[in-house]
Image: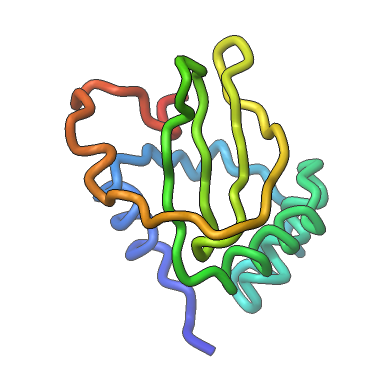
Length: 132
């Protein structure tokens, strides 16, 4: 197992534009020790104590790690939403609900390949998930 390099981690966060404040990180000594010795178990412990449901994210990670191709399409017909197509045979539908998108169900079938340039014409000043 590789030793966790905190300085390298913080540097990568800064490169991605993520502000990291180690003083805001509130974890007990055991959790901090686990994060250094066994980052996966440490993260699960920290998430559990923070109220994050690991089982949901474990299932999502298991699902998406098996997917080889994800395509995204805007919803047609003047509807505000998008479709994620997994491996060209499962479509996940999301629609706008106020200022966010909500999952609306799935369909199975054969789907076309999407265009990887779908986001190319978006303006540069869109919000980032890291804008807190």
